Image (cartoon, rainbow, N blue to C red):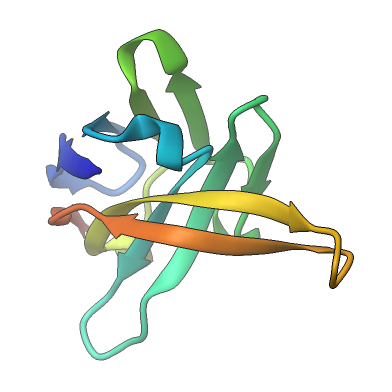
Length: 125
């Protein structure tokens, strides 16, 4: 699976950006997509993820400001970012994976992780 992310750039605080990530290749091997980010000097963190059926999950720091969505027909996941803050400055990475239920351990496990190249978002104060 190949992931191509784009849409980053420089924006002023309280501004908006929309990131897009297009998936191609063996798409049968994934069913969930996500956005992560990594700020300078910090570890990569989950921003939001979305399952094939549309269930979403957000980091507390972005709830109410960032919205993840997907267009399965276009194999694309989006991250609409509103009311941006300087602390949102980071490289944003697109991620795709397969979430499967394993009956032997009775839990969902994540496999088949794929990563895009990242797109830089800079929010000025």
